[in-house]
Image 1: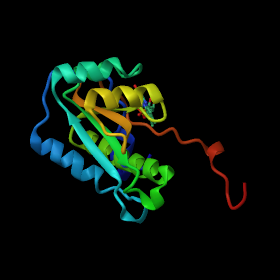
Image 2: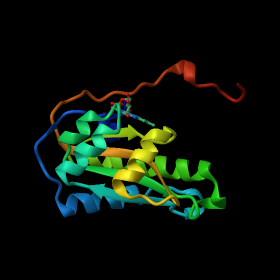
Image 3: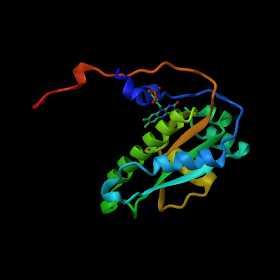
Length: 172
Ligand SMILES: Cc1cc2nc3c(=O)[nH]c(=O)nc-3n(C[C@H](O)[C@H](O)[C@H](O)COP(=O)(O)O)c2cc1C
C-alpha cells in the first residue's frame, strides 16, 4: 500500500460509537466534502438530511436491519437523490452520483477522526418507505443510504482488498 494513499486505506466501517455530538463545523466539513464529488454533467442531484435527535436516530435505527448501532451515533446523514435533478432524469446517474458523494463523505469523516458507516437503503423498498415515513421525505426524493457518524468506539487497521484476479489487461 502506497503511504501517500493512506487516507483511502485508513477509512473503515465503524459500527461502535462513544457518546458525542457533531459540531456545526464538522457537519459543514462533511457536507462540503460530499458535495465536492464528481456527478454526471455536474447536475448534483444529491440531497442530505441530517438527523441528530437521539429519539429520531433510535427510530431510524429500528428500520435498518443492519444498522441498529445508528442509535448510538452522534448523527445520521440520509443521503437522498432528486430524480428530476439527475442527468437525463436517470436513476442510474442519481445512484452513481450519490455513491460518489457518500464515499467522499466517508473519507472526510475518517480524515476528521470520526467513525462512520454506510447503511444501505436503496433498493430495499421497506427501508425506503420507513425513511420516507419517519423523515417525511417526499415522493420526488429517493433515500439512497444513511451514513452513521460519531466518535469511534472501535479501531480497525488500514487495508486494501486488492486482488490481482479482479484485474484484466486490454481484453477480458
Ligand atoms: C451499498 C452499501 C451498503 C452497505 N450497507 C451496510 C449496512 O446496512 N450495515 C453495515 O453495517 N454496513 C454496511 N455497508 C458497509 C460494508 O459492510 C463495508 O463497507 C464492507 O464490509 C467493507 O468494510 P470497510 O468499509 O471497513 O472497508 C454497506 C456498504 C455499501 C457500499
